[in-house]
Image (cartoon, rainbow, N blue to C red; front, side, top):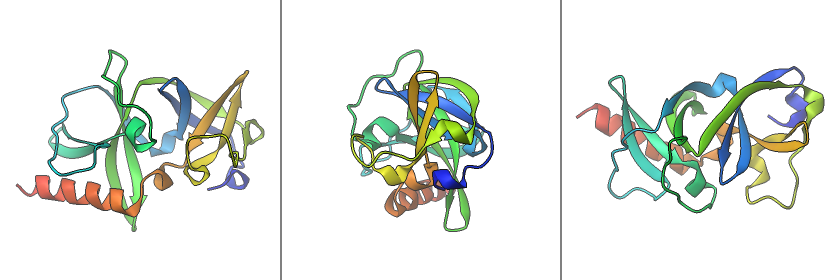
Length: 166
């Protein structure tokens, strides 16, 4: 979805990674969890931190810092896991995304969202719906369905299926 497709006021959940502010459409967020023990799965990419047990279901957890090429950091009291619903091949995948902190939920009007810049960000523009403006601060609005590659999502899908069948 590009900024042209944003024609109504929408709520966004904002969170931080390495002091940068990001947002994701609240419709994609299932819940936000305090940081908990993550069980590492052998032979997975470093950004695939492992899995958590969420009320009896296995939920893979991706470290967004590492996925975006940022430095890994130790978790703090504010570190959290944002449980997201990702659309992949006509299926809904549940995925945990590790974030430094969750800030707030607020609404943005279409007039507060600009197209993503072509230069000057560490992140590929196709990951972004746009740049939101709130007061004097910019935030990167993620297109969460495009953040993860097919390879990433197949890995998530397989890890959940393997562990749920044990």
